[in-house]
Length: 129
Image (cartoon, rainbow, N blue to C red):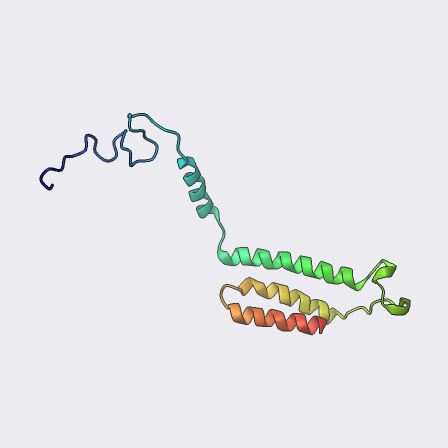
């Protein structure tokens, strides 16, 4: 230790150390958010893999886009019909397949991001183009 530097009255780790969370300079215990870090640690142990999260997102998007595509293909309001009262033409099953592939391919967005978005774009343009 350099000359003229005094050692602290308490050693690190003792109650009352101002540099340790949960203690006060007067030796008492103070409320802390240490329990939050325990919850966060539990979340990291429980959290599924990134691919599982991406797959869940992709399946959600499949349900959302396929439901929207089917809903738009069969309009029930007269205002949703084309000019002269002719109904909107129904798309083929292949178009619905392209919508499903466009959403499902997003499960691999972390591994191959550019290829994933290109495949999705091509499928959407093929379905609606």
